[in-house]
Image 1 (cartoon, rainbow, N blue to C red):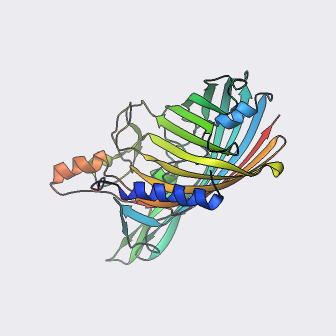
Image 2 (image 1 turned 30 degrees about the horizontal axis):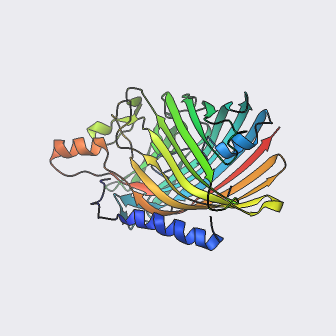
Image 3 (image 1 turned 120 degrees about the horizontal axis):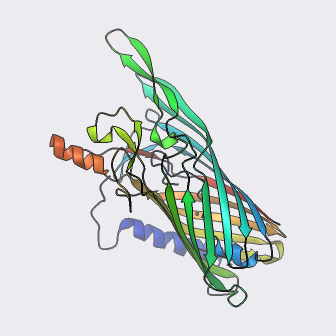
Length: 370
């Protein structure tokens, strides 16, 4: 999708300010969060680095976590414009589970292993007949190290966590499915076996590098903590994984390996500290860039992003933490891909692919320290 003309104060920035202002006022004051559908942001959507936990859990050696994310993508966008295809377009039903194990080497250094598992269903229509393709299995496993910039004993009110890791291509990137085509002349359907859509493939087929940052500090009053998190996964590979797409655009003949990102800014408020209950409010932006940061940008990809207002509740009891988040989307943008731009030049006609997004999702996280 192409980026819309930018006014003096962009509409989506006004939504961000409005969401944070209204939300924090509703909470009584600020203590102490994947792009969806066709845009291939997989995983639970929970940041891999959490400096607040890292600082408070230094006495524990191990941390076991299970994170679950669910959303249904039915809203079709080209750029920032939604097409009226609800009920007749593509339906993506996505379920992601991340199982993570963290070992604290000392109060400032830790290493984490994350094993993703997903179950996804994609349906589409051919001449009024809706059929399904689906996938289920392990995705691309991640291994990452984290470092606290400041000694948590000397900086209990704030810290910065820096993470660097590796994404291994353990998930299948060429799972096959049965697709139907309709012949109007003979009034018959023909089945063909092809790789399922990129949005529901279990893996990317490439080695990636994870870079993330998580910073927090107490603000306003001791019960409120502000935080900022940023996570970017870069793929320094050749640009494609060699899996055919059978798309008409010659520049999309093979499946690309796109970078991805997740940014969050917000605050947590310990509304009932006696019972370990906190409320969370954040703005989150996640998506796929048009161009990879390091590697090639060839092949088929659906670049784009979503901005959402993320509300949540957190309950902590002894060594257990349960979190529930519900991001509500405010802004979708399916940007124009490099392949779209190249095909526009080749054909002399403007090309811009679409993508399906979800307007809301929910994320559940269970954490145990020992």
